[in-house]
Image (cartoon, rainbow, N blue to C red; front, side, top):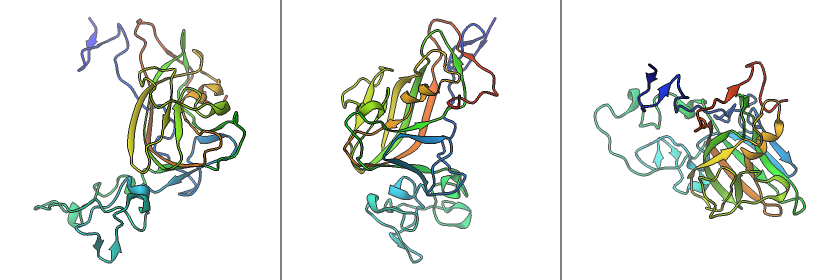
Length: 267
């Protein structure tokens, strides 16, 4: 008799349908501080820079206050202008007894969270340089290695904010000039997607996959799990809370995990 999970799947007979984020640094933190590249994220090709930035930028997060100008601190009402020194004001809110967190003003988290330095967002800047077939991309390392009879299926998720330009995600996005499409099927793990929605935080969750079945020591697998830019189109894009989760096989076969001492994407 197997153990039945809350979702009704059996543990022992087949994998339970439980996922975990395998991006090595999904909080996008830089050990060198804001303004530096987030740890375990890197650029591929030329003309692209990435930095770890405070989540108040572009209004992804904020400190909630009763009015736009509170205690001498001015909050902007234009999301594109939001910075750590001038967070985005989300509008009026109603307080009640106990609504002020531990005696302070209303906050988006209780004495911590991303405002306390526990997480960051990533700014990606592409200068528009390169030929039509150039590679202009941002990739992430993941912390597990897999061996499988075929490509490992993933779900890739993230929030994005396009300050200017456009970008792609999915299969080989940004590699060799590859651009996504705006009407591709989000359930197609081999698809590549183009995003053009300007100056608004948008959530994306689409199917993805590894490059090969055997991923250990195979750096090229990361071609499919990051972001890319269209050659010739200068762009500034912000990313928050990226997620990459492996999906259990549907045929009952296992996905084997290699030795924990091996670091994926560094082979």
